[in-house]
Length: 68
Image (cartoon, rainbow, N blue to C red):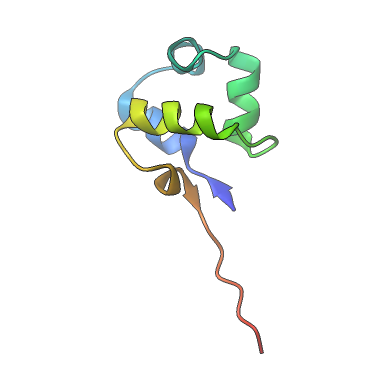
């Protein structure tokens, strides 16, 4: 699973600190979310999705795993 948070942030033309303030976390924590080092709690994920005007599922790119 690859986070697409950076792409959404660039489209919105804001920095990490601005997003972090809106969703109620530190810039350092938001950076972890953006780099895929930590997943946000579900309530925070909904705040992020609301801020970017998308669904939570849209915030991540999923790899399809095929069973052979």
